[in-house]
Image 1 (cartoon, rainbow, N blue to C red):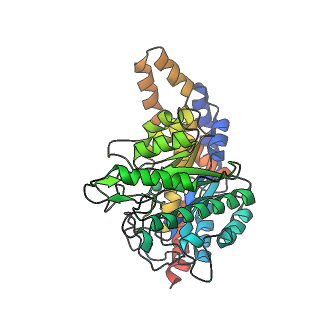
Image 2 (image 1 turned 120 degrees about the vertical axis):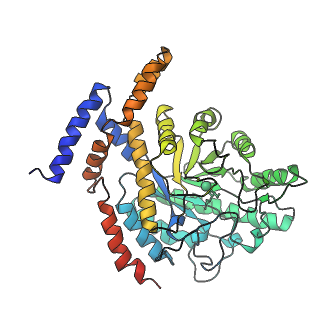
Image 3 (image 1 turned 90 degrees about the horizontal axis):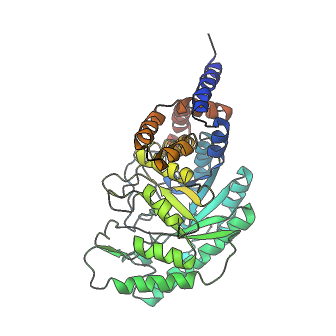
Amino acid sequence: MTSKKQAVEDAFVIAKERYKELGVDVDAAIKAADETPISLHCWQGDDVAGFENPDGELSGGIQVTGCHPGKATNPAELRADLDFAMSLIPGKQRLNLHALYLESDQYVDRDQLEPKHFANWVKWAKAKGIGLDFNPSLFSHEKSAQGMTLSHPDAEIREFWIEHCKRSRKVSEYFGRELGTPSVMNIWIPDGSKDFPADRLGPRRRLMESLDEILKEDISREFHKDAVESKLFGIGAEAYTAGSSEFYLAYAATRNLLLCLDAGHFHPTEVISDKISAVSLFVDEMLLHVSRPMRWDSDHIVLLDDETQAIASEIVRCGLGQRVNIGLDFFDASVNRIGAWVIGTRNMRKALLKAFLEPTKLLKDAELSGNNTKRLALMEDLKVMPWSAVWDYYCQQNGMSGGIEWLDKVETYEKDVLLKRG
Ligand code: RNT
Ligand code: ZN
């Protein structure tokens, strides 16, 4: 009987032949998929709680549901869980941190944040050889309780959040300097209104002015990059959000910032895969929050579904690998949180591999020559090409299985580690 390892290799050889017929260089595709960084979001590990005030309430119109036991309750636990999750996912990874995940013996308010509060994260990232990304946290705080931060009519409250964002840029710059890879810092604010506002312009003007103030100091892109994230609505901000799509698209384009596209932040039939090409013509770089909205901005775990595939395919077809930063943004507390990271991140990586395995030129040639029958036939045929044999081989090369062998390990970890947490 052939060993499992041999079977994976045999299937790979056959798959390679099939792709060769289409002119696809499988080894190059594996390499490209492997080297595309995916930034894991720390907040899947503890339901967006963080360490500033772990018992505080999550607010700002976002919601985590579920009560699966064993969430990380301190930095050591979160890093252990991340180490474990990351060991089950192939390819280049980064970690995306929120300001809430600071470490200090005393309470540190948001306007007091300093790079030193993240020294342990930097040490950890250095040891792993990965980059860090960052986010100021403008929610879960008494000064955001009215659902307004940078657009608040009270100048004192705006000042507080401006200071928080300025300090966050310093933390982000510190990440970039220490780790030798720029940190992408994403500003998302919950600002909005539950019911129809009388003034839609005022908050947007104040938001624009606050952002301009935050961005005053020039920081080299070698270390730090600023991104802004739009949103259609939030819980309690159903009628209006100050930072809408038009607002931030124009803002990013005029201030030379990165635009963050979150898959759950648009009208239900709108998809970010269709926005990437358009935005690429006017904005240098993008950040993606790959997520899965279900009926609303529900932040479900990323699936290998049509939209995840379309996002990856757009990045590859448009040749935007260097200009699109891939981040994840989902939080599900109804399943094992490490399993959530592993499933969602592996799905993103699978989508990238499938995208790189595509004979893009064949498709585009068919389209250009007006042969849309061939285009459709090819696209459909690609769905049943043996990409999973390539995936299995790729995982095997990385010392892991392409299937769900990781699940046994996660279940053991749950029993031995997670369920023993207080
Ligand atoms: C909220 C935004 C934002 C957050 C994270 C925690 O709707 O998507 O990106 O999910 O910053
Ligand atoms: Zn997001």
